[in-house]
Image (cartoon, rainbow, N blue to C red; front, side):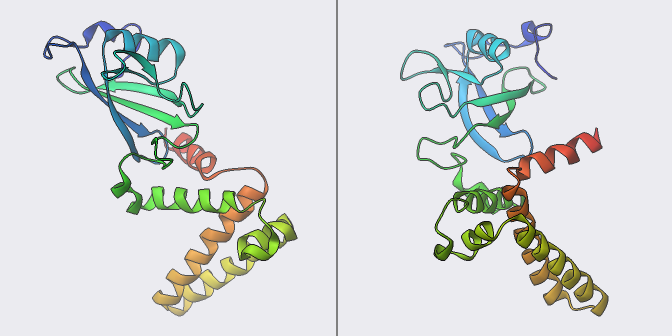
Length: 206
């Protein structure tokens, strides 16, 4: 069930003596699990009011909006409860690293999943956009401009098609990896992101 101002009262905070219920935060587009915290009634209310994920910090003994100091907030997309109404799932868009260690997720083992791995590659590509051209192939592509990167997308697309038609599965996988990489470079060169592409796909499914 989605939690909003009209369904908020259905949450059950009574099962825990401290009035806290667990809240998992999941990337709204990639599906990656980002972190887990606890919410009380006030934290839920503030999360809904501000559209920024807010927890109750047991160490600080107060409400704590994720990213309130760093600026790496979790922009709420929707809030859901389970069938017993005693735990929460927040779908959010992170505005920077979620973990205090500087990683995208507090659960590093999730990085092997397909979409999070693409997101990790996207982050690496973005970090090289302003690097010296001689430092890496990616930086050199950025220096040569969008047209050069777009040309590579075209070339790799042809290679993918040829490998598929030839029935060469190993080459198809290799060329597909090259195509995805160069596509991400083109998107970044236009200040666009993988998340925006995923959002288009999500809208098409709805």
